[in-house]
Image (cartoon, rainbow, N blue to C red; front, side, top):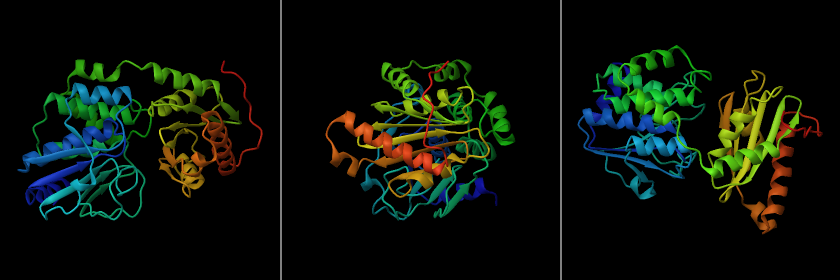
Length: 343
């Protein structure tokens, strides 16, 4: 029995599935949740729920939810506590309770489908393939193998997710992504795909990216910057995607203050640098960090930082010093940085 058939067999024995997205879900997570929900429906599960924590703030993520009319519900721990035996808990695009999600640690998980680096995954059904560029690639394989009816909305969602997570096949794409995209292309809606690809950008996002440009410091081939305080959490990956393109830069890391935590986003096409390991080693003792060798993220609760000062300016100064010092040490950089202007 193959993995798709094994999954369907488990689903057929259940009456409910609770699909939990990671915090601030992106198109790959959302499309994977949609696909798993559709597979569950064909297996006879009528009670299907998709939960998320955090915010849907990135303009592409908001467009995805709105244009595809995704039925999302805020996550409440009560939804996964004291579940009946035939109620399933599933993770897509993440894998461990309490890591990039608000599910209580040690909560039993039934299904995990993920492509992010992770260890100690514990679930009844696990399909974890770090070599792939998107979780949606795995779900496309399942939809195809199980002959699930593929309407244009689901096909477009999965295709856009693969394109988004691989930067239009320029980052981490494998033959599996190209094969999945070829299959989905024949079923997708080109006009919907265009709308998903070019949503409007908020003023707050532009301001945050501008701040990151102004605050950048380069040290050899490494660029470190921050966006200050922002309500636009997803401006960080957008800023770092822009700054890593600067001539001479091979690794870019951008951090910022979002609500009550420090968010970090990193990119590195340099094969000598594994930014997932960099963030994990630098901040694992005070928060969380990790990811692939070329794309990673992290989060540090303000904690003691917030106890020192009440003024945002002073707080940002302290955060900048501490975060930068840890990154400089982990990357074995010299203490001096070049603050030259972008040309």
